[in-house]
Image 1 (tube, rainbow, N blue to C red):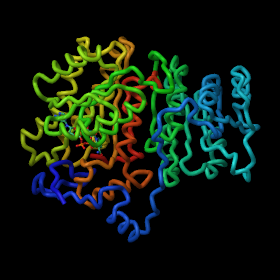
Image 2: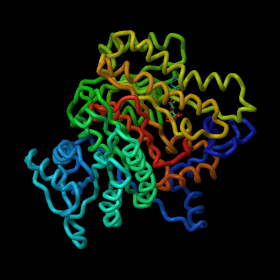
Image 3: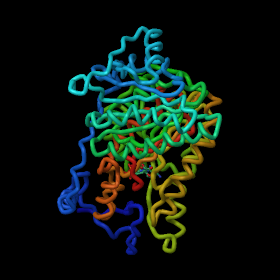
Image 4: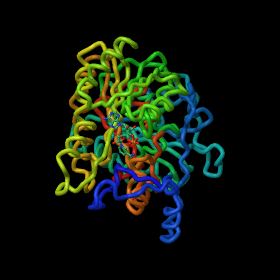
Length: 495
Ligand code: NAI
């Protein structure tokens, strides 16, 4: 047993008044199926959490090979011509349901792309059943159109296998209040469906596609339909123009340099490894006292370690110079380093307020300002910040932390046009409850409840965040800019 000085709170749970050293860390309870969790689960008669299937291997040319995807649509279906080649390119077998609206548009798109379609097998033919349903609702003009979505999914949803996927597509811009109502209804539908599917380890997400962004649908479709997005559900990801330079789907980060802060352990270590797996040269930064851990983390992929406190006055200049001199500038910057120092506001001291604001927000802005004004950053750079569900839902005892994590969301929105003008992008991920030292330091009960509140009844893993960051750092996210992607299993609890 060892003491922790880190986060201890979940949403709605008041902090312990005894100070930051009051709780002990019990390694035996660390992972999502801990002893306490199993006892609680048994006592309350709760179902066992589903086993989520996660991808760990490098991106493949055809990640959906051998899998069948049922494609449908309603109204004036707009993106069949993009969806069909995207799925076929990823190796999926495309199925259509005879007699459904939208089938003729899908058939036309398939003929144009030279793609063979299969008719949906009958209910008994489990071996050939689709593991994913993709529904194009981009043409929905009124709430009446929602019925087409119901008619498509309702009879089939119980056939979706474990770890299945539902991806809806909607127009990001709408011309009339009726179309806006239908588009927003799709978001509500997705959130509710995700809660129903979570117990099977399946997800439902929505892609809101702006005019001019459909050309970049293939990357987000690959990601959301793959096992790299296992802990993302109930989310809307908006794709907008301009679309940045497309790139390869295999080793998409080859030849790129990626700066990752807080890379010694936890989520940062997982991010560094995932970026390296996809070909990036990683420059990992962490505090000088973490240097041994940082070196160990970076060794398997020959990452360059930098012992540096990101709040040090000279850190923007040191990083800028190092990246420019040794690597000709960074292509990817991941602002992951973050801290919690929890206290109810009435008990919060100036030093812990200042410390959290400085690490989580101040240093991020100072480093980016220096990088953007120098050769330390390539023009088409992609920046990814790590926010938190704490910045969306708010946690009692985390006014400092929640302020900074919400600040990150505002920051990426505001800086997005400037990055787009350079051919780059800036986005954020908002992790929910993730199994790291930060959440292991929470008291047992809130920790266990925190896990249980997700649609998957479990916490996420650092690799879940790493995969979302890798997607956002890659050309697969060519139309994603200024967004915050929640990676939380639809949870509102997180560190
Ligand atoms: P962690 O505490 O395990 O790791 C954070 C890393 O950042 C450590 O290696 C630490 O030394 C480094 N770091 C802290 N201050 C630094 C500084 N001034 N200069 C350089 N490095 C510094 O935390 P974890 O859980 O891996 O979190 C990573 C990020 O994810 C943080 O931004 C955190 O706020 C965020 N997050 C984590 C959640 C969770 O459930 N674990 C939930 C939501 C967000």
